[in-house]
Length: 302
Image 1: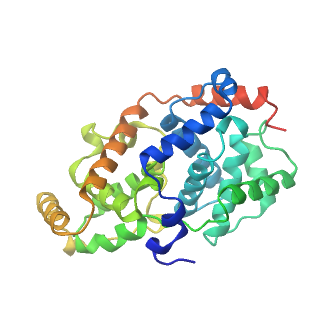
Image 2 (image 1 turned 90 degrees about the vertical axis):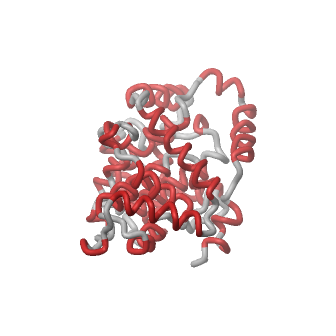
């Protein structure tokens, strides 16, 4: 296992530019343009919200920790830049990604338990034969070239908590924003520490109650609600917390004096704001109908 992100397979093989991601997805679209035209999909961000909500439903039934859910999200994003969504049964892929992520995060689940719980949520899309999930697991591993170690931004947030004198509200909101960044391409575009610093910046400067983060403020069952203290979120000491204005000022000074890629933080901020803007258009019913249409029509649920 690569303890250092910079020497990891994540950095070496799963870090892309926006242009590279666009080209890879375009290649998938042009590979079978007839199917793509016949079965249009929602905006990728809306589809990510739907996938996340389904993962959360399954994860709650099995008491899965947030980091395993986050790893499953990364697996989905990696897999679906190699394979077109319309060529798969997304519900089986979701269940398999979570099953594999739990293994990698050292909290394994029995395969039969995963299948049974998944069938409870999506009975018409999950085969009762557990071997189907086992076959799908090898499919995921193969498409990801057995590169399964994922580095997450949570550690950076924990390390910066005391250094930046973050309050409990700041940490909670930053933790939630990190959860939300898995619904974007940021895990494939920026290093984990950049995602963490972006989340801290948004937590210090914006509040969902002000209407700036509609995804956090208004979406029922949003990923922001997943990570709470029971998932290991650190608790700062009251004495270390600065006033809000002081925290923002200190953070800005720390950012200016550090070696963080400011442009990457700016781009990441814009990506998250874009997610929260589009979140207002989210319809679970629409996503479910569009997915069900191609899964059933192409016999992918069997």
